[in-house]
Length: 390
Image 1 (spheres, rainbow, N blue to C red):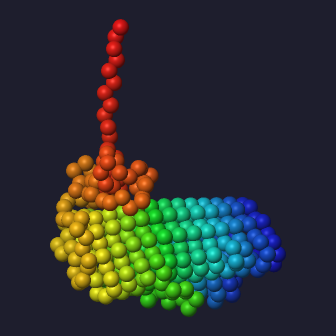
Image 2 (cartoon, rainbow, N blue to C red; image 1 turned 120 degrees about the vertical axis):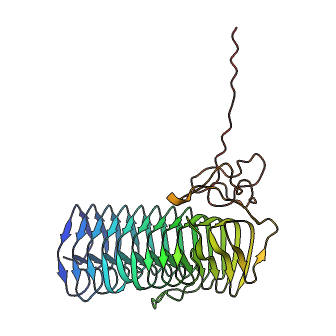
Image 3 (cartoon, helix red, strand yellow; image 1 turned 90 degrees about the vertical axis):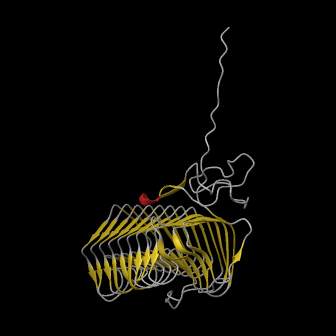
């Protein structure tokens, strides 16, 4: 189907259609479009982009599913080229980009994504999704996506991005950035990077990575801040099982937990270049905690738990960091919350973070510091009530 003007679709299905160029199921050429409660399934763009649909104009998408679509080029599920892109409560599942990137969806302009799911998509680069311009992503999951040659397994962010309450789980790449790649400024909060893998570097994520190969990526580096974030059970063939820093103007890890259910035979964090600061962070069950090749790296209020070599290379070590036992609840089951005997309790500084990843109040230790890591242990206070009989 071709839509040349404004359109409003509700409850529409596009199944098993084929287009030689872009938009296997539908092509939205101009004006403003809304698509609600619709399905794009098993459509094909033979030589173009957008296997399920090509949106060349502004689009508001709600409760819509893109499933099993294929494009030769970018956007196996959908290609968004319009100036305003809003995606709410939608699913991109089992889509494929054969010779290019963004198996689930390609976002060519400013995008807002809420409560959506990118699952089991495959692409030559950036398996789940690729964001070329500013992105605001919240309450979204990237699960079991695959990049067969370059880029991120889960999602590649080529420009500034804000990410909150989002999950990158079980994604993989043949190069670097199993969960995600960040090419510019980023603010990441209350987010999980779990069981992602990279054949080269950065099992959980890479920052300033050379594998961001899209010619229109910003690649201006910028500052990256990660708060209340977990890197759990990620792996890399070369450097940085959890995180690989290719280059950055400034990375700050604040109340972050980097852990593995078993001893990971690699560095947790590997820094190739750039300025990196680590504060109130747990690094657990990695052979090497922080490895610096170049750049300026400092850390303080760090708990190293089950780490053979806490630092390798020149890393400015803080006076408040120490070795200890994180005493996670059940790391074998992926539960990295703290327990009552953890050495992370009350061991952090007040860094202005008021709540943990679960929304619990920080600094529950009655005047003492915050707990180290992404979780604040909930300390129960027993109140004895005495009832007097008259």
